[in-house]
Length: 342
Ligand SMILES: NC(=O)C1=CN([C@@H]2O[C@H](COP(=O)(O)OP(=O)(O)OC[C@H]3O[C@@H](n4cnc5c(N)ncnc54)[C@H](OP(=O)(O)O)[C@@H]3O)[C@@H](O)[C@H]2O)C=CC1
Ligand SMILES: CC(=O)N[C@@H](CCC(=O)OP(=O)(O)O)C(=O)O
Image (cartoon, rainbow, N blue to C red; front, top):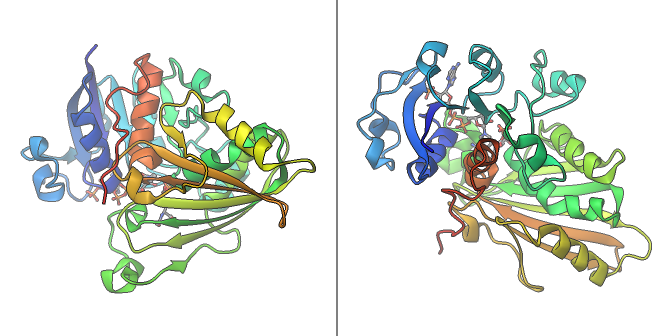
């Protein structure tokens, strides 16, 4: 099978990572590449690491340019995908890497994103219960946010196995590429290097309702989430430290057994051997997820930690994994599971 794929937002971080992965995908031929203010530029001027595509010229992001492909990836800012997607035919697979179609609750969308809700598409986190079935054959995919990917994978087994009360406390550190390429004063090297600081504290981060959606579905009841993101002085990676109150009778053995069962057949999620903890460097450039879990009997809590690359499993790798499932390809096709270390 040869799949012709267009990438809208090819000049951005998510689009660049997607192209890096698509260049190594044996079934994909790369078609139109589009941007906004950078339309007309050579890709090589903006993404110099993508040597085989250096001479390609970025086009305007219009339905005309994106039509005629089997798959269209949208790596655009929030709120920009819906207008483009509605002009693409129902037979084209559209994979949205932005947030527009992730949330089921329109009120949550309007509260956190401040615009009308565009709808809900099958959710591209295949490891969640029931997600693969919804993705198979689908022509629309909503790729999750990077923090919800890391957090949902760390905690859902505790909820599906009934080990945890319906409350979770999460502190996650992200590399700066999570904020995109557009210049922002708080992302200046002199602000970020050698320092860490939280943001979106107190329930204000827009990924909170997405985490609640995923964890509540796993628990079968509403889960409250306290989420504190932190900016870390590194270009890529997320380390999510998550905990939830353990239900009575939970032991270290029952926690371990639940996580071993949840991830036994997962090609990308590695439950580390006991005593070894996730590290962002181990998954840099990889679609792999490292997870470790512990029971703290004194505090009565289950602690789960995950590491992902925000641009790979957290965005572009998750998008390719979901595309593979939607098209009936082997889920792992073209996706690296090795990191770049040190
Ligand atoms: N970075 C990350 O870790 C993650 C990102 N995502 C999502 O992926 C999407 C892209 O993010 P990211 O790559 O980081 O952002 P960037 O700012 O790096 O890139 C944005 C891209 O969108 C283009 N663009 C901007 N405005 C418009 C517009 N009005 N119409 C069409 N194209 C436009 C830009 O083109 P130009 O260069 O010409 O301005 C650029 O190609 C976002 O929705 C983001 O939430 C999801 C998970 C993680
Ligand atoms: C470090 C940093 O700023 N990260 C981004 C999250 C990036 C991401 O995954 O989210 P979306 O796809 O929802 O934009 C943030 O906190 O807004």
